[in-house]
Length: 439
Image (tube, rainbow, N blue to C red; front, side, top):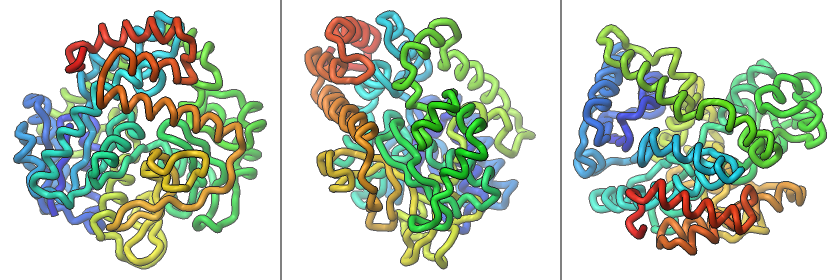
């Protein structure tokens, strides 16, 4: 089995390598190619990756390369974790929207649109190059904005599934609070990428007991603190919203906060410098604790579960799919996992080709969403609104043009005023001109 990681020079990568090493029986990787144009970073990450494999006795071979075509050639699955423009572009995404009184964030609002415009053309080019050598390869997208990028891949006919670590993060937190194994916690997780709610927390599978009311009653303060929301709001909702919902539920408060503290990009850039220095230490042979602060927690377990299911390697008895993993085997090589995939009637108020983030049955044929109970209009309305924005955002990413950018911004529920949309359009184009072929 050959896997390729595009963006392999990311400081995230040792998290992924650690999962491949620990869970090698579930996902027996023989060749792992780390692909990245940043040669110096790639050398540091690749060196640590090989030491992690060696320490844990993994027999697979790790190759680093800046040659994309060689890296993805004949790969069974390709994982995408790239950031077009690097942390410098992220810092801009988090800064210029604030000049208009709007959220500055890399996946939400105007900053999220800028990231989509930079990213979609690059990802589609990579996917086409994968298809030339192995049209049957699966593409697992961890690149934000995951929903828009996954929709672009699926519309272009690629075998693609989007992955985010928000759901597995909730699963792990709830499992700890309930003192059960993570794979025994099944989330009724519904929405769009970075716009989701946990409407039930079930023990043992989709038909299991819903213990969410007990979780909120006994651990509501801790859950609310993690979300940076008042306990009273969480109790009134009766569900657990993703922490990204704070940008919608407390927009003005968040804007005030963002204007008075360093950007997340600046924090991450400092962390990355420290991490890369650690990776260069030949004595280091495990992922450092600092990596947990970088983000992407539990990504490796989710990625291993997903890749194993898509490649037909999750064929054990029903129950937890991997030691420490987040999915649950349901027979026939399938697992239940939260992924981004086509709606296909799951949420009846959306088009079939909208991309949603829900629990799905995943096997070598792909991801099939599980049935979702009728949603409260409070959630369905916002999902429909943001889906409309995502459709317009993808049109802008695929075809360019100032008017398409303006329409996407005007349609976003965090913007929605023509003066803001016009000012943000000017700033977006000015700050991203080098990445926009049409600008």
